[in-house]
Amino acid sequence: MGTALRALVQAVLLLVPITADAVDDPQTGVTALVNATVIDGTGNTPRGEAVVLVSGERIRAVGPRGEVVIPEGARVVDMSGKWIIPGLVDAHIHLFQSGGLYTRPDIIDLRSIRPYAAEVDWVKARLPMTLARYLASGVTAVLDVGGPFWTFEARERSKTMPHAPQLAVTGPLLSSSMPSELRVADPPILEVNAPAEARAAVRRVLAERPDLIKLWWIPEASRPLGEQSRWVRAAIEESHRPGVRVAVHATQLEVARAAARAGADVLVHSVEDRRVDDGFVRLLKERDVVYVTTLGVNQGYREVFEQRFKPTDLERRLGDAEVLATLDDLADLSLWKGAFWRRWSLRWPDPRIASWNLRRLHEAGITIAAGSDAGNIGTLHGPALHRELKRMAEAGLAPLAILEAASQGGARAMGRGSDLGTLEPGKRADLLVLDADPQSDIRHARHIYRGSGRRDPEP
Ligand SMILES: [Zn+2]
Image (cartoon, rainbow, N blue to C red; front, side):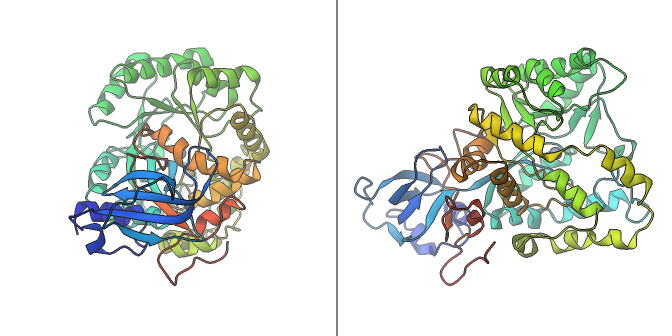
């Protein structure tokens, strides 16, 4: 299979009925998807009876049937009664975590049952399958915002895999908080406390050509925020020097504000502790900061820990069955209960605050990116993004705004806004054909057309 064909097959998710001869046709190599309603991901009004012209791995044209010239010899595929949207982007995942019960010993320590090294080896071995789950779920690009140095190798390997999304990675998180359970060879976190350490750590990561640098800012009660922000500011300066953008984990309003003031380009996670104020909104707007949602990840933990996690149909079909099976293991484990759960539930933020903040920031015109935080316990690689989209709808965002966040917004978070995320000429032909209208219900984005005679189940 030629590179162009492989890219196209990936682009349309295996399954729009396109044959090797049609695409590899040396005469044109062009495919025209005609008569669908096209939602281009820019927030523009959807266009009915449109044509999407794909050449190799790129979009050549998008427009009304009468305006787009279909070259002679092009393969024409009738998509009447269907919708075409950009491939989805999950702007917050962690490939070093499985999504299963044993993947966060710093949160629930079950290393006596499964050693952490065994968990990580298992995760690495499953990487090609894990990445394929994203494509099968309609997610054609992902941003890994924190993991060991081996995630850089994963990025290189993914380029040779037949079914992998576009993958951007940050490498290790920089943080002043280093859980002892994660002190392993090639840890996911590099500990930094002072500006000089932060600069040295950034330089170490920069050597691997990260797509972004990631800071995990967990505020310390013992030091004033202003003092802590010194290492954050130093890390951001050092990253910006060669032009590498910085994403900061900041879930409290004052930490998020300090991060934005220090120059953060992307705020990872919602602000969960308080409603955002006008000054914060202005700050994000002035600095053009991208805000990544992750509304669902806490709920995943909670449902697993309370032993009431129920996978959606999509998760049952496309999620990793072995990972899902671990989520039931707590039923047999008595050791974690009691003190552990009391400690955990005390920190539980009210999810309505994050939803309110998302709506406020969206209405103010801040760039929103959809992120699932997949890899965390109860948040499954691949299908989890669809859960997140549903939560965004529950928070009050309209389907088109959600799709924009899950395509153009995600591409901007990755720093790939000019290359992917919208259906425009010159961009990657990463697109999905849907059997149902996502404008009436965002859950219809799960109804991916995979070729004639196959339909996805109702949500
Ligand atoms: Zn995360």
